[in-house]
Image (cartoon, rainbow, N blue to C red; front, side, top):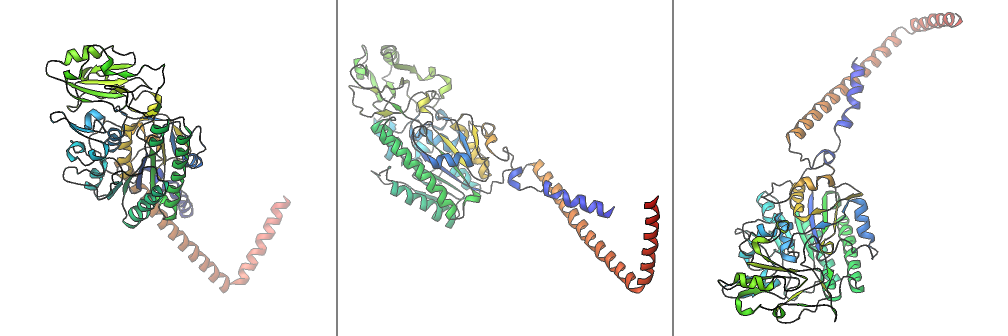
Length: 485
């Protein structure tokens, strides 16, 4: 009986005490969120991308992801950081503006306007720090700001007129993040930003050879990120998410294209406006002077076949771009390929984003790899608002109020999104400990039983060897008779 019990207990623990990550997410692994600005979901289809392919084979690849509207850089990045739609977090544009003074600041200077970013929604950096983790950010939009009197513990803001396309600088940034931040300073969570292929897509168009070369550069960098993680002993406890803020589409040009120029629309006049945000691609916002909202709206409504005009309260609910007070009373956006001009066409980009987020060209790519993720898993599309609760789960922190859900990404995880601090996991862990303890005791008893039995047999043989021999002979004879029968 003792022998049988011992064998059973020694067999069961290996199955009951599987590695913790197979049962639940520990929250103890580090996390790196890397953004390649403007990397459209299908950019790997016309370029050889061995490192992105390998990342998909060893991790998770999404068919595509859907960013929030407005599909431009700062708003979509802050959705990744907060898990909130743009109308809820309030970073509504790349440009900060004041409708009273008519002052505005372009993308770079807007990074330093604290009250623009610190608008009630906390980015994951601050939430993680408040729960005992160490965070860092390099060049990520929102890095420069202070949130409720707190800043990111380790941060680097790019200098003005920074070259976002320099591959040598990219590698230096990877080295800094991997060695100095994640290894030497033992940070738990880092965000890392790269400005291409967005720049190549704008300047040369998404179908250009220059854009394809930028994608090859991204692929080399992804390979370098993973190689450097391995070099510094981080791979076994580092989850890596690589995605983008938005996609890119070709801007229509030429004599047969009817440009959208607001001053060409009958009945529209700048004199009726108190403030406007125009000439920034396919979207625009207008603040009419008091009493003139309906006049401006009626003049623009139907003014161009490829221009959509809404009062903010009438914006399609699916866009989640109407409720915030910073959004101006009239919102305009163009069909894919068209841009909105004020007085005359001044935009020279061959590629553009900022369109309706249902447009396929606005969809970014998504990859994830690491100890908490499945390998060789292709998943369906999901909204990028869901990346925030996924990251909070991986880090083991309690999320702020957000518009996403872990239910939309838990299938990517080995644990299926089960945290190790849940009651079921504690009970299961306790059960495992009981079995392991019993097995250890049984193993010791079995070993003692074998030793004592062997010693007693040895003593009996030594004291009366002839009796043993005689007994053996009688037993052999009995066996012989039975065999004969």
